[in-house]
Length: 281
Image 1 (tube, rainbow, N blue to C red):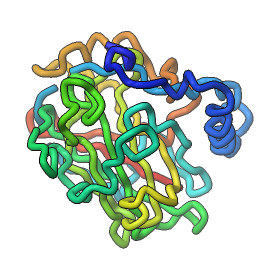
Image 2: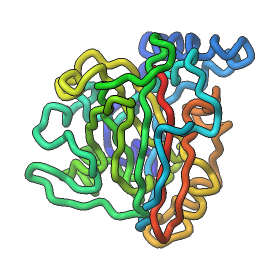
Image 3: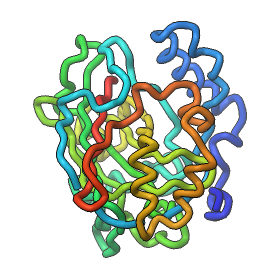
């Protein structure tokens, strides 16, 4: 199903040049660090398209190591991306960031008056927030708001099937080494998008929980091989077919470069997986 199938409002990519230009310019700034070769793809800054399928799994790895498959030089910031149509950060309807209970490591369960639990292959998400302006050292005390779709491609709060849930969304504060960890499930692949995870970086926990002074909005790309393993399990519905019809090179977000956004995933479907990524901002 597509985003339109969820019955939500206007897509970011439908809002015209006045909306897209700031994102394009920010993207251009990130790409110019890599040289002119990446600039041809500036037009590929679209939005999320639709959702797809879920099951369980958990592994070990350190976020202090290089998380992405590409190098993350301290001179390069992770690209700025759209938050998509389902952020729940107050920019498109609901604002979950100001709700009590949003600060938590385990985002598989809903909080507050909601009680649902997301199913799927267990996934530990380990991020290391780096301060580009300070030589690439750890950005201690920063906070991350992270969210992604369910195993069958739905977004809590927005999609009809999980409109009354708020799972797969949460905020965590970085430790002294810049490390942040979430416990979640592997996201599904829905029609029109490569498997991904959304996140926003804030200078502090108080800034995150007041949805203010956001430093960066970006997305994590999941690797193909591990995604195929997950999508072969029960509960991930059309994810395998959706993955086969897409690629990182044609995805409307990652097609202009994803070396700083591609997570390293370790572990197994049976024991669980861990995704790690360095996040220079």
